[in-house]
Length: 379
Ligand code: IPM
Ligand code: MG
Image 1 (cartoon, protein in one colour):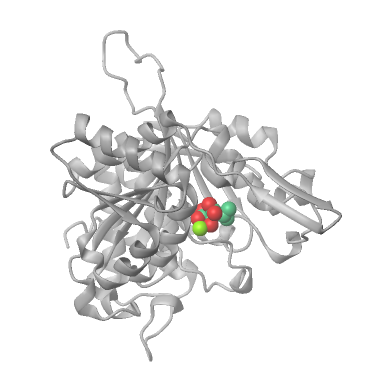
Image 2 (cartoon, rainbow, N blue to C red):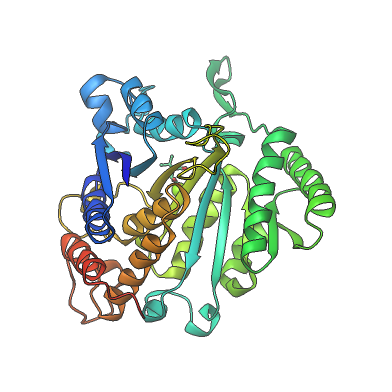
């Protein structure tokens, strides 16, 4: 089968980690006889340097014409000038919006051999397996922004706005995912202070009562959640939350897994209404538009040194195969291969124990790709 993948490597460590993701994708192609046609597009700082915009029109067109998008990271100090109105991050936010990717799935799973890579005590980490479903195209990230000066000096504002429809579609997706997991959903908000949070709470509570009464449901304030993620992380199953809370809480949650370099993500939109290949029959492939990226940033301090952990990107490739292409077995083969590499003690510096040998970004990719090819699928 042929698939088209748009590749937006971006800035900093983006290109190095994406190269390893593609290495593993090619190994899957060889082993399962798929043809993945990849095409590169510009996004972020490199796009600003080459055409003056963080999100070229050609990149949007490329993504729209592809089956899925693999993205590295955007940003870096050379584009940090606070006086400019062109920023790398606009590329990332813009592509999420342009493709309608309202749901960002950030699974946090722990590999047994990384238990002591986490700064948390091992006994707290037993049974941690959670999924954060972050709203990705609304809220304070996308509301009106102002920055002005008056007689008293400067002032700025960011509007946080959510509609009922935006809340309902993400809660439906999160609750559906909870049903496939441990059947528990936690809504994170700040309903004691924010009007938007009170709307989230009332809409979610009603929806859970009317459509998902079989799913265990609770609400939690975001400050309390920040604490409980450390105190009793194993109690969470699916967390659903608005854009900015989800951004902050997932960086925190990555510490449970040992490193920001371990966490993949899938950004999904609504299934498209493409007609099935043959009328009356199921589509030959799933038609959920998706963008897949590690949750970490561009880490300019270590870019180009072969130090970056590519596993978050490699695991994002597994999510791509599963959610956008419906290739579940192939996705699982990557996950097993990653486990095998970690069990063999092949690790980058971010997850190495004192005294342990440190592998380079490319060595990790080679090791995962080799296991994919060899077919060591059983843990
Ligand atoms: C993320 C990142 C982005 C975000 C930045 C780079 C704009 O932190 O994907 O979590 O805040 O969404
Ligand atoms: Mg973030």
